[in-house]
Image 1 (cartoon, rainbow, N blue to C red):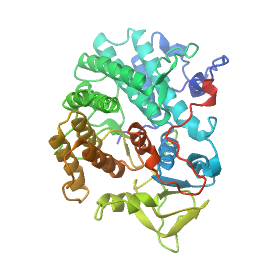
Image 2: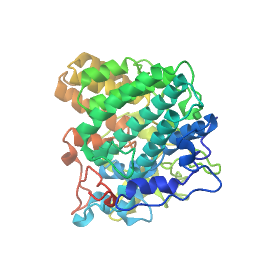
Image 3: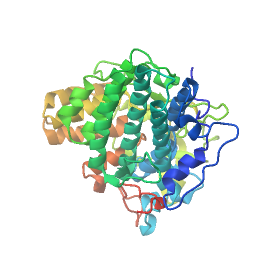
Image 4: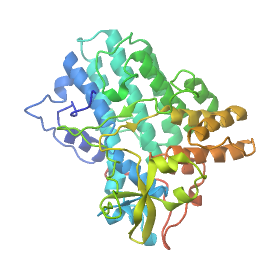
Length: 445
């Protein structure tokens, strides 16, 4: 297996961080004497340097993933994170009227992590455009890949924050923060540009991705991922017809393996990282995990249909209920088998749910019901028995997303975009529902 053992961009990752979380002052770049500087690759980069940049882009897609998942999952009442930090059960649930802190780990981790990845992708694009070491066809491959990743990261940002900067090439002259709709318009255009690049990139890339992109590591197959991301952006933008067209050029398959799609990979080697959402399982009543725990919100268990296998495959009953800070839960996570388990980036199961949503938007209601039945049947449930109208099918679609995509940073945004955040349960007297993270304080907004 090809794993990401280190971030190949060895030059001053701190500079990348500061470039996006500090805008009010200038920081002199500290050049790593044991590695290349940024300036050393922006002009005249070698093939080896470009390939290291490409690997670094993939590696940094994992930045902030754990906090992004647990923070949004807590706010959406999917889970509790029981650990030593009281902000996970206090701030994120609005305990006793508290407001979210725009300078806390939960508000800064994903923002800085995603923008570090975007910064690396922009450096790759600039380096490719300023070198003669590769052909025009090879350049198109690097650029199509980088633009696709930028688009994906921007989608993740608007899901959590409701807005994003898209013009960030020059850290000293950042563009404005745009609304979700404006970002999605930009993302869809960028994905089309990237797909054109991939179409001009020949049959193979000059760089090698990790095993997480096995099956999506050529220009043609990465184009399928590009179209899957476009379909995601289109349904978020309310464009069912556009999503359906894009799905037709992706790896969407109603009869296919639900797990097909690119993945984040993890490792325990030097410079690599472990799966940040994995938690050690309780062994028995004598050996419970009473330390760092992801506890399932009881409503997710109680609201499930009888026989839904997602409940028993994604979670397990604890030896005893877990209690912390006035909160309690009977089940703990089993979402990932080990600390090096892959995390899906965009799998076929999600594409089938996107197809169902797009079909509802396009008023193809039978197609939507057929897709939802694929998901239901895979979870051990009988076919949908409700009314075949847009409102009822939308409710069913959101419910299937709730269970298929549990603890994968979807629920908070799904409820927000459908105006349903106020339907979430209040766990303690004085708690509040938040459906968006605050933009970090360092953005000076």
